[in-house]
Amino acid sequence: MELIARESLHPALSDLLLEAAREVHGRAGLYKKSGEFPAPIEHDFAISADAARYYASGRGFFYRTFPFWIASLIERILAIVVPMTIILVPGIKIAPAVFRWRTESRIYRWYAVLQHIDRDGHQGPLNQAGFDALLHRLAHMETAVMKLAVPPAYGDLLYDLRGHIAVVRKGLLGRRPAD
Image (cartoon, rainbow, N blue to C red; front, side, top):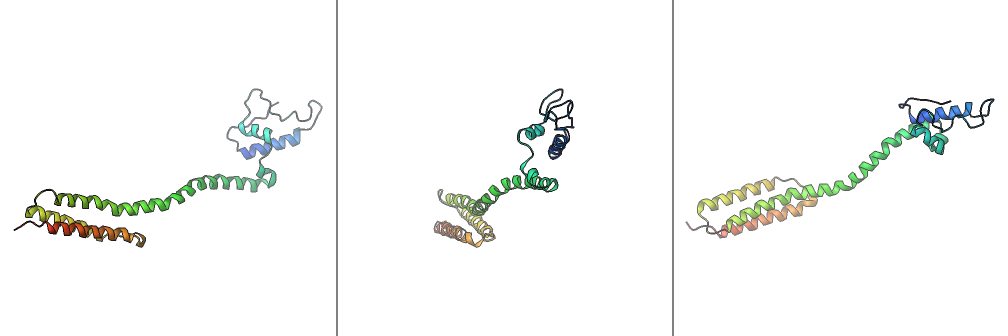
């Protein structure tokens, strides 16, 4: 004799069904010994993983401790909370580092532009048109940097950049071409 259920049967219901079958049919009878049915013996159909777990360890902790509806609710909550915690905890830990990186990168990317302007200003003699173009690029960069909105904690980096812009401007003005 076999107890057969669909594969879609919920594991909690599988435990309840096996528990009920054990209570009703588990005692010795005229044609069977005690504990003979239900038993984890494969005949024509394979035993499900849930049934094998039930036979190996009995009902789950929550189902032994709480009523079915509470145990089912706890398992559902845990099925949602545990994966979310596994995902959120590292995400929460990495968020400040990502924020710091993004804020600093908004400031530091302007240094590449500043280096190009400085390098172009020191490559050989400058004519008036090239000098004016470099000053225009520097002014455009300074305007964009002035519009940067960064948290006060990163103000030192922003003011350092503005100071470096002033140093490059001073160096360029010192190389002003003769008229």
